[in-house]
Every structure is written in structure tokens, then in C-alpha cells.
Length: 159
Image 1: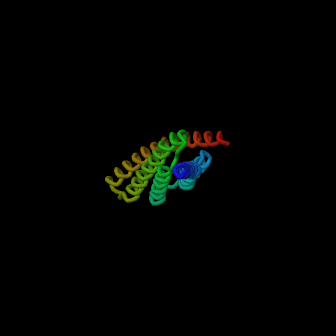
Image 2: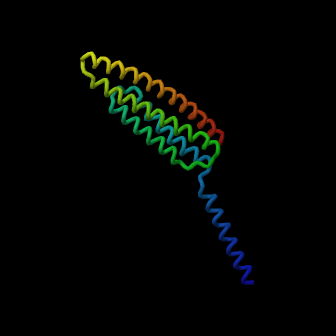
Image 3: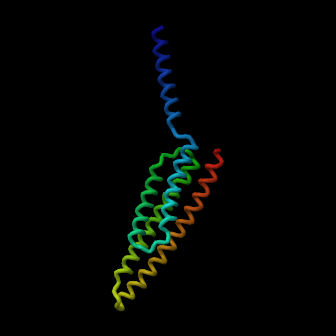
């Protein structure tokens, strides 16, 4: 009799642990909400400062987008489709951040250039670097827009 009570107690503990584990993990809807909130926060940052020609503002935006990428990377996702979207989203925000950091450095270099012939060359180099980094940022932003659309469509299908 004692043996059966012990087995029943162990079984109840195992069932309770499994129930807690399952109930404590986020549902697909909760994961979608968290993921979407972070992506929207990153997109809002871009929308606010996208037309800035100020090196400090651009550098600050780059740092904030890097934090968004880190936040996305740290998000605990268990849904397979959301996991598929997560890694490329992190990469896109990192690429945008890197490109904006490059733009900021080029803007600073252009602003510090002297009015000499060497200064003009520095400005031309900075302009070329800004164009290149801008193209990279635009490509990464286009990728992120596509991923955001995929995320929204997937999360809508949950409802």
C-alpha cells in the first residue's frame, strides 16, 4: 500500500511539473505580440530619424537599432515559423545599424574636412562612403520590411 502511495505521489509531481512547464511557456499569440512590439519599436526609431544629416543623431540611431537587434536576439521564441523570421530580422537590424554607423562616421569626416584640395578629396570620399552605406541600409531596410510583412501575416493568421 505504501509503495502505491509513493508511486502516485511521484506521478502527481511529474504531472504538476509538466503542467507548469507547458502553462508557463508563451503561446504563439504572446510570442507574436512580443516580437511585433520589438520590431515596431525599431521601425518607429527609423521613421523618426531617417532623414537626419546630423552625425550624432545618426550614430545614436545606429546604437539604438543595435539594441533592438539584441532585444530581438534575446527574445525566447519556440514557434518554428517565428524562429525562422527571428534570425534574419536580427541580421537586418544589425546591418541597418552598421550602415548608419558608417554614415555617421562619413558625415563627421565630411564636416571636419578643411577647405583645401585634400579637404575636397576627403569630402568626395565621405560622399561616396555615404552613398555606399545608404544603399546597404536601404537593402537591409527592404529585407526588414519584407520580414515584418511576413511576421504580421503569420501573426494575423493566429487570430
